[in-house]
Picture 1: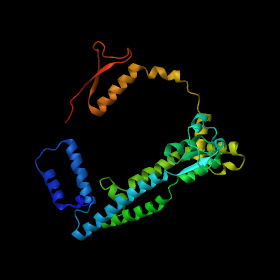
Picture 2: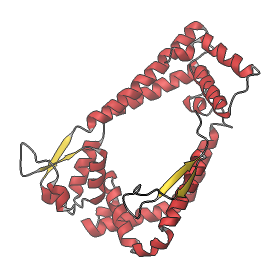
Picture 3: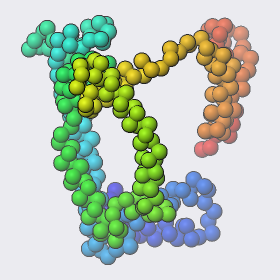
Picture 4: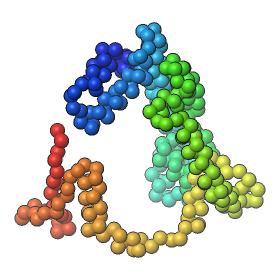
Length: 293
């Protein structure tokens, strides 16, 4: 793929198409602009030797990205076991569904799958368990992969005569300083509220784990005490109060507006023929709209 992005003949054909009198649809214009950017990032304007360097760097970036994903997948195969009592207050039904450890049948296994890790981090009250799960879920090999990826990105930016890799990503935007200004202004806006919320988390941790424990909120504390704060500070929600906003007619109308906006089609409720529906609550809907080939 990286070689195609540096193919001069293909690039010339694309440029000629864009400059011709041939009328392109909006979708085709977007696609051609995207392809042209890929060519430019592939070093199409450079000499043969420099272009080869860019192709090699792009290929290396792709390899490192694949390695990063593979490492994450490999990390999910890890397992860690605990006695069921340590996983309170998880529901007993959930704990019973976990596999038993082959080396110690009295323990159950927590796989490092994102859903399992998230559940433990958010609901298990034992901080030692949360810490062990957090540390086991961290994919340490990817630290080196990320370092290499950053280096390759900087090399690529230099080869393409950009100040840094961010400049490549934002080459069609006003400036690379705009995102930083936005983030800095956003940080100032939320700083006061964030500090207030951290104090709430520290207070909850001190109540649960004893005085002095709330000095620090560790990565394995955050999800758990955020869930506790929401449960403690939020008013109980009466589901019946929401019913008037989610009646069947309102939901169908909202879904119709959504598909109309996204796909340009209309949903029209129509009368069903005899024996066509299997339940009186089932409705028949006709889809109307122009389907593009």
